[in-house]
Image (cartoon, rainbow, N blue to C red; front, side):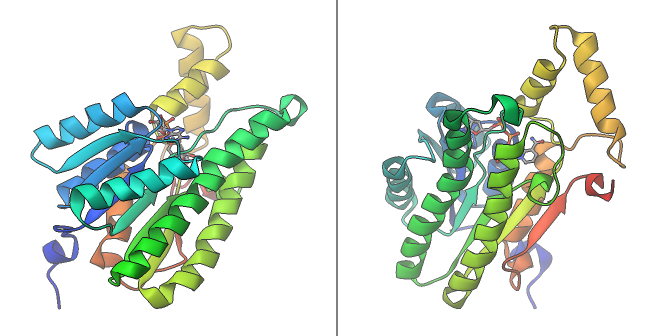
Length: 268
Ligand SMILES: NC(=O)c1ccc[n+]([C@@H]2O[C@H](COP(=O)([O-])OP(=O)(O)OC[C@H]3O[C@@H](n4cnc5c(N)ncnc54)[C@H](O)[C@@H]3O)[C@@H](O)[C@H]2O)c1
């Protein structure tokens, strides 16, 4: 039986984290790197990705950053090629990049709907397809971890219809690809965060506060946290720790699962 430290050890493995320049993706990148994985951060904010990777390298870990739009098949192919070029192999893909514009259906135009689908759903499809093809060729399995949301199970607020459609979609995609890829040792799972403090949610809170003003934003945040049984938002690291678990040998018999990490929010 392996010791706990060994089970969590990702030394010699290589990982791609999409949207890893900030927020949850950065928290995930930090934990995977700490566990010994070489991490390629791919983000539409290329400069942010390089800065994040530099910070990880400064802490003694192996990390690189590059610009990529997960909705673009050529970018996705480039990211996978780059990971192999840099690290010689690919073991873990974390599909984290996502957008959640708050637009009520009455104002939701086709272009906005398509953009949410392209980033949140098409991006996951592209990375899963290309990465699993490589992992099959490598012949030693792999892990694909999709960051969904509690909105993959239950809507959290009006204005997220497009988002909820994509997150339900990613959960369905996770289950189906888990069944197809399990015989190759490629395990596909999802993590469903509740409210996590990130630049994205901060922007949403500031926007929802209407008139710019700290008090409004604080009031909205307080109203939001009042609905969470643990009475606080989560931190990116609280998702990072669960993704590390799913990427590691701790989760050796898990595929097609969705782990909810929400401070009890779905309990209502
Ligand atoms: N923060 C939350 O409360 C929360 C809750 C549930 C689910 N999630 C999910 O977690 C993921 C990350 O959310 P976050 O709050 O950290 O977001 P964020 O907006 O704070 O950060 C997202 C990162 O993804 C990058 N990105 C955006 N579009 C991209 C694209 N097309 N290609 C590549 N990179 C792109 C951004 O540049 C940014 O660095 C998303 O999938 C989101 O749906 C977040």
